[in-house]
Image 1 (cartoon, rainbow, N blue to C red):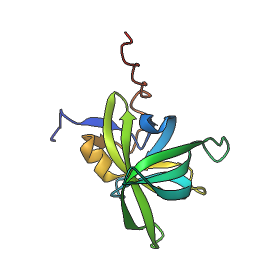
Image 2: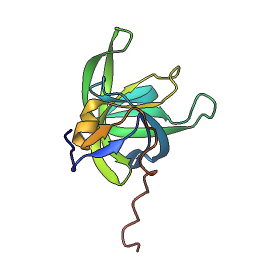
Image 3: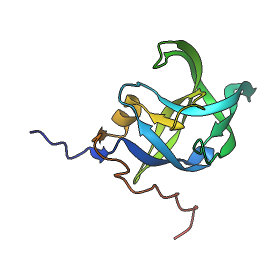
Length: 156
């Protein structure tokens, strides 16, 4: 059996933070069948800032029972057509933001999509796992500790 020392193991579900968007304590479902990660968003409005394309949206962070949301803005990476799990094609906006999982922090692309009927508001796709050098043990959940917020500059 081969082992990979440079890779970290995660479970089928993990706690994450999206610090650039001010989001902490999100439960994410790992979806190795999805290429790109997805964030539950509504009220998506593209706009320009200093000649660059941006998108404004409401991110939904909580569960179906405990609802939380945040108003966010992020640079727009691209717009792409995604085939959802039910086979329908959707045009989605794609943003890139820092993802904190365990003790790691790295940039991840997220499509913005309505996931209001889904249990998990965030899906982590294969590209995020590859870039984060992660392997999934689907028999486990919440393997990694909840990510810590970075210390403010100059703090000890």
